[in-house]
Image (tube, rainbow, N blue to C red; front, side, top):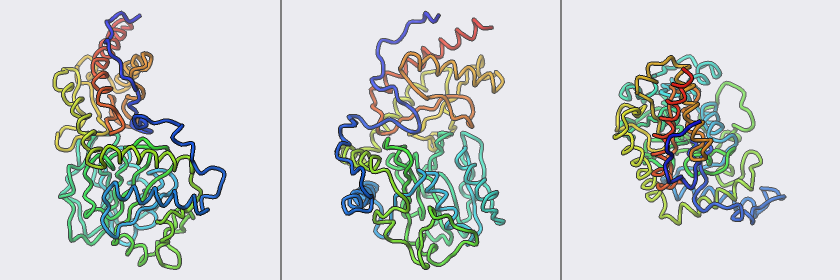
Amino acid sequence: MNELTKPAARPANPRFSSGPCSKHPGHSLDNLKHAFLGRSHRAPEGLARLSQAIDRTSALLGLPEGYRLAIVPGSDTGAMEMALWSLLGARGVDMLSWESFGKTWATDIVEQLKLSDVRVLEAEYGELPDLSEADFSRDVVFAWNGTTSGVRVPNGDWIAHDRQGLTICDATSAAFAQNLDWAKLDVTTFSWQKALGGEAGHGMLVLSPRAVERLESYTPPWPMPKVFRLTKNGKLAEKVFRGATINTPSMLCVEDWLDTLDWAESLGGLDALMARVDTNASVINRWVEKTPWVEFLGRDPESRSNTSVCLKIVDSAVADLPGDEQRKFVARFAGFLDAEGVAFDIASHRNAPPGLRIWAGATVETSDLEALMPWLDWAYKSASSSEAQVA
């Protein structure tokens, strides 16, 4: 029985999961009562809603003129697979990988597409590969923000302006939270369920004019599933980028996304969203600075994520344990928080080193993170006490 004194304040919203992420403040199912349900999404009213979702998302992100945005199936995963299968093979590929999703894309490129000219530039969790090694005469694939490692690229300065290949960027935990350098990005993917807490199952795919040129000039040698097809008769399927989705979307999820955009716009748009994220991350930064048993997984402050904040336990009583025992400790730690209803789903990703992962995106209230920090100390002491009792 844990008898340690519990903090007095509790987070009003204990949802700190890194995906699906917390809904935006003020979210209500009542806001979705006008959803276009039980009708064809290709009816004029349905198409108008889908087109609105695309146009307003493009405006919120500040996409450059000539960039196209589409709603695609399968969340960010589907959008990335669509990009890899549709565009790769025309040139050699450099794959940058420093966490689980980068490893997934590398596996797909090497083992599924079976491309022969692939360089995988890897780094351990907590670090970035040497970005200067990327060869932009080739196609370069990378995640802007490593969701499971808490490490991001600091900016787009390392990407060549005069590149010959395409850049293909998984930005699902960076979009709406970090300053994406669109001039350096040819293909960008993200999902509704991440940075703005939308619903799962739908991805978004951004194409630059250079990516469109590749689609219209290159035909991959492998069969292309229907849900990946972005061209027709050698030309871009423009209707897909105006709301005529490849397959049937959930119009309830579309309505939820429109409601989410309402909230984001009401704050003041992209700059306000990014400011909220930075403020949230600073709460965790200050706590880590004064807490001896924990450190950031990401070693370099310039490349630490401000959304998926990943932490490691450095107290030797835990850090010196075998990996499986560390995971058991983290499970106990997270279990105490879950049982108290003050934080859900904050153990590190199953493929990452044992530790914590706290979502600090714009839909999380700063006051909830401030209330959470003392509970982390309480949970650590509680888990340590229970460990001692077991021993």
